[in-house]
Length: 181
DNA sequence: GCGAGGATTAACT
DNA sequence: GTTAATCCTCGCT
Image (tube, rainbow, N blue to C red; front, side, top):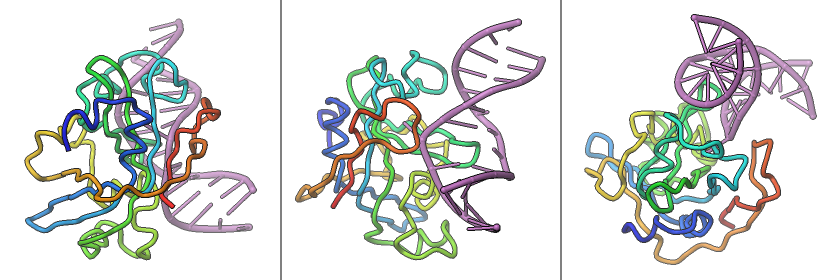
C-alpha cells in the first residue's frame, strides 16, 4: 500500500478498496476484516460531500494528504471512517461502510455485544464501533502508521456492484457506492 | 452566542 | 415502516 494507491481519483480508489483488508491491532492481538462496501465523496462537484462548501475545521482532513483517515461523528452517536484521496488541497474521501470479519472475531464481539457475526460490521457506525475506531483516529496516517491500524491490498480484487449512495439527500444521481458481490 | 441538521442505528408498531 | 436518540459543526446574528 503506497501513496499512489490513494492519491488517485476518489471514485477509482473506492473501487480499488473493495476487497482490501484492514488490520487493527489491540493489545498485541489482531483483528482482520475485508472491506465489502465503500462510497466515494468528492468536493465541489458533490453536493453530498462535507467538503462541498469548502474547507472547514471539521472536514480539513479531506483536503490533506491521501492515505490519512477522516473520522467524524454522525447524529451525535456514530463514528464514520473515511480514507482521504486525491492530491493535497483537493478534497476527496472514501467512506468505509461495511466489512467482513476475517480474523479476531472474538475481539470485535467485545465491542459489539449481542449481535450475530453477519451484523458485526454491516454499517458505517457498526464498523467503527466493532474496530474501536474513534475520533482519535481522525487524521491518522495509514502510510506512516505505527501498526495500530493498517490497510493491506487484496490479492485478487473482488467483483462489485455499483449503486446510488445511501442516507444522503443530495447527489443521489451519482452512482458512487460500491458493494462486493 | 445560538439554532438547525446530519454520509445512522436500534427499538418500536 | 416509523421514530427517537444525541452532540458536534456550520452558518448566521
